[in-house]
Every structure is written in C-alpha cells, then in structure tokens.
Amino acid sequence: AGPGGRSARWELHRPLSAKTMREFGPNIWTVEGPVVSFFGFPYPTRMALIRLADGGFLAWSPIALSAALKREVDSLGPVRFLISPNRLHHLFLAEWKAAYPNARVYASPGLRKKRKDLSFDGDLGDTPEPEWAAEVDQVAVLGSFLTEVVFFHRESRTALFTDLLQNFPPGWFKGWRGVVARLDGICATNPGAPREWRASFLNRRAARASLQRILAWPIERVLIAHGDSAEAGGAAFVRRAFDWLLPRPPDGPPSP
Image 1 (tube, rainbow, N blue to C red):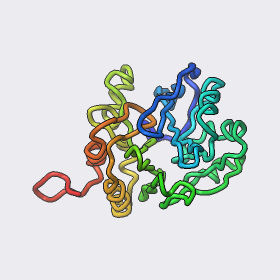
Image 2 (cartoon, rainbow, N blue to C red):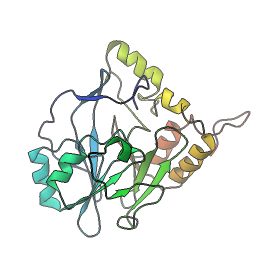
Image 3 (cartoon, rainbow, N blue to C red):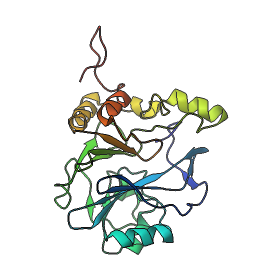
C-alpha cells in the first residue's frame, strides 16, 4: 500500500544500476532495487537473500534481476525459494523463476488470483514451511484487506517487513508529496503503515494477536523494503511503529 490507499499501479522510475549485495547480518544479504513510481510517489525497493543450512537461498521480495546481481548470487549458492510477502510484491517473480527454474515460488495471500499467469508451488500462511522453519519463522498479519506475511531470520535476529512498516528518510518525497507522506505516517521519525491501511484493520483483535507473535521474537534488526532499515534496537523500533495498533490503557501509554 502507499499514500492515498488506491489499488497498486507500479511503474519503473529508473533502471537498476549495478549494485552489489550487502551483508545485513550473518547469512542474510540485502540488494537495493530500482525506484518505482506508485501513483507518482517514488518508492525505493529492497530485497533480501537468506542463506539456508543446505547452502541454498530464500529470496524475499525479489527485485529486478540484473546480470550483475545474478552473477553475484550464483557465486554464493543456488536460489531455492522465491517469496512474495504480500500481493503487491510480485513484479519480478517471473524473471527470477526463469533464471532459477528449480526454485519454488510461494504466493502471498490473494496473489494466485491476481497472477494467474504464474505457476506457484505453495501458499504462504501463518506458519513457516518445513524447508525453512528451522531458520526462518513467519506470521501472517491478519485483520485487513491486505495480508502481509512478516518473516524473522533467527540467526541474524532480523524481522522483515514490506509495506506494513515503511520508514522514508526526511526529504525523500518532495513538495506536496512530502506533506502527504508525513501525514500518512510513513516517514522517519514516525514510521509505520500508511494511515489508510491502518484504518482498514477492522478486526483489531486478529491484528493484535499477529503483532504479539511478532513482538515475541528476539528482534535486533529490522529490514524494510521501502525506506531505512534498523540495524540495532529492532524490538523497540517495531513496537514504536505499531503504536497505532497496540491497545491503550485509559490513563497511560500503549501496553503490550
């Protein structure tokens, strides 16, 4: 989701330059993707690659696959799984599948219906698949029209968010777009989900139950698809970003 709450329409804003993978923590790497236009708002993109015990990789929210990126990935190990964390993050699944035909593609809730042209090997749910359960946990955040599956890499203690937590640096959006983004609650120092998406969580009980499972993880780092990630203090960062969802006592701050 993005400012304005309209249905997703992504357009490539500028091509991906040759950028290398960056180690975000033990056995987890990030790669910066192209900036895309979401109804005129420039959105930076980011993917993660998690190396599993067998040496293969789980590709989370794949970005455009450049030749340089493919060479670097190939030098580290095979891609085993292609993950769409929510049904807005699907643009580059087909090209990754073409490049890695043996990789298994997993659909986020609602994506099968949206991308009937793709062949999926499985559907993401509220529990991790056996192939990665020992290393990566997951929670489907329920209660809204858009279900995002949040992941947690155990070894690096990294929580991974796509659209449910956005953290754009000051000055990223210019002019009136900057005003809209700040009002929407997706900019530092008050990151989070866009306000119109927050309002769509009609089942707050289900959403809070999902959030409590996320907050139970020993989070140290937070990797974000759109905006600045947090490489320390992850648990407090997530709690602050979801202040809008936490129940409030009559005379006090949000409580767990």
